[in-house]
Length: 461
Image (cartoon, rainbow, N blue to C red; front, side):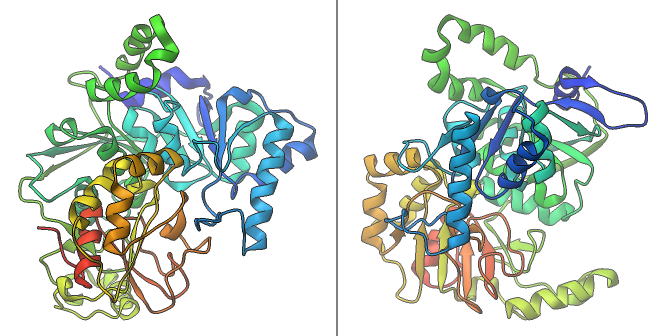
């Protein structure tokens, strides 16, 4: 009996020679403006054509401005990247979701919401957090720019078969906790290298109870524990999400598609190379204290002591404390913040905005905090307006921006100033991730919203 990882792998191997990587067929490649230009140039230099343009979708997200007037670029490099992608897509016949197309947004938000992402697929993108699409039962992973060129030319990639890793979440998720807390807790337990050389399948009663958007948050951060990808076997929740987006398009073929999708579900009694079990019944809201996602503690906890770590880890822990300006034993829920960010491919979907709005309704953001809310796509922004969420945010004193990666990474105008502290729903708290010298604490949308109100790290409980 096979697990989902083995099933997808078997169905996509074009050729396998012992002792060599497999030639793996790729069903879908997503592209954005930052990691695509060199790949298109490689095709041009080699006089190669794109193998199948129907398998490629592009959007603008990483380096673009998210100001209301997003046509005005302050960064010439960003403008050049955007115009190059536009020219390449037009020249090669690749579908591009540009500004005001109605579907522009973060690449890992638009794929699912447009029904492009489907179970059993192999999906790649020149972006680390491609694992997001694994929530649908797809084998999705990030690739380098050279590999982007390979996929453009062949719809295939050289890939070694990964090991399989079963992570089982047990127990009912406590009130006030979200999927962001679940994945931060897991990474805190197994570490940034706990999933190396594996693809993780997330399962258990807690996963079954989650919505598709919550599962996307879990899979999104698989890379942060070193895994190649993360996924969830398709079930009725998956089918219902896709039915809403594809039933009219597929018509009578939808039921056939469902049968195909569900065939990839992990078989009962299937085996894995590695196992981990986690009980979530006592989970509390989580927040990072250091400079990687594994440096995570409960919102009610204290910054750990250096002596608690292995000797080989102590120097990096000491550096993390120096960089973040925290000290051993300090209560994390007393740490002041001056910036708060709700958005990114991790938590920029409509459910995330709804969670934040429930906390911010009839409240005011602290005078000492700049709260920036950036929807993950034009569709999310449109829905947020329709549901009155944007009004709630603006009345609370938050700034609502146009769709894009924004403050998740220091690659656009939205940066945290040097030395200032931000609590963020993004996926990485690396040194300078949100701008040179910036300090980042990762948390859920609820925790970020509550912290923006209080002016210090705190939960919504």
